[in-house]
Image (cartoon, rainbow, N blue to C red; front, side, top):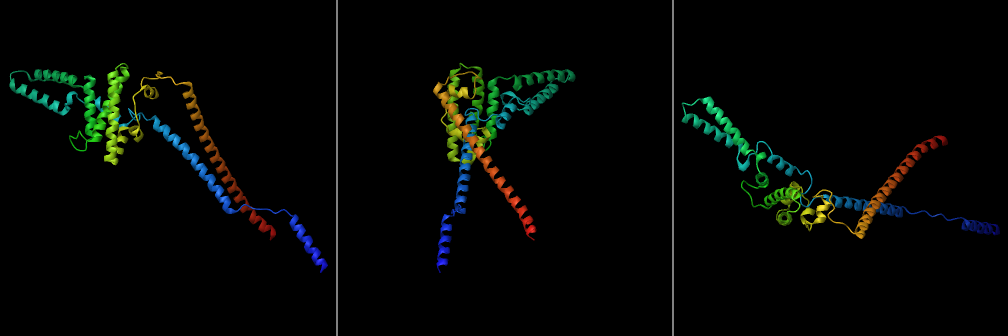
Length: 310
């Protein structure tokens, strides 16, 4: 009895002296993993928002995106050889000249037909040079570009009052007026007119967004604009001209040292957050890869150990 008591007390003392190991529960490990994943997603979203904001800032609120297919197509159609000035169609002009030629032959039967044909050919060349769009003034080319834009956006033939048609007409006027402004830096009257046109286009597109959102997003995509450029507060000032290099690389406004340092700090902060998110994501992927390798190695070693025991 005494020996049993002594042995039980000694065993109890040994157990009390041994170190008690604790293991983290599976649920807490999952929570930590989920928290880490959420943190990575948050940082990735912040980086994506920064990139989206940078892309939005790069869209010109006056001219829209560069290389817009609609604008390029209209400008190419204006200088096409088949285009004629004053709204004439080539087929109508050819029919008119042919009718005049037949009438002259019938009126003067005694004249040589070859001479009449040579005279009419010279007249045809003169008329073609007069009506050639390349030889016309910039105002005629501008009218033709506006006409083509109106026809492309019209909901029905002859439509000139729909919101998207008005926005397309204003967009073409803005493009031609911007080209004029770049050549004439001191034309302050047309600079003011350009500012008013951009703000009027914003107003009419905002109305279209309330009235017909589907038509609105189709129109701004075709015109090379974004929802941000339509809804933002815009002013055609020197800051805009310098940012989008309206007059080349000329410095139109000088930033103070405090503003420059603030911009530099913001840019550095963006770079650091992006770099940190990428590094943490790479570390997470490396840990997952190591775990996969360890699992594969353990699965390969387990059959060998079973064979050794056999």
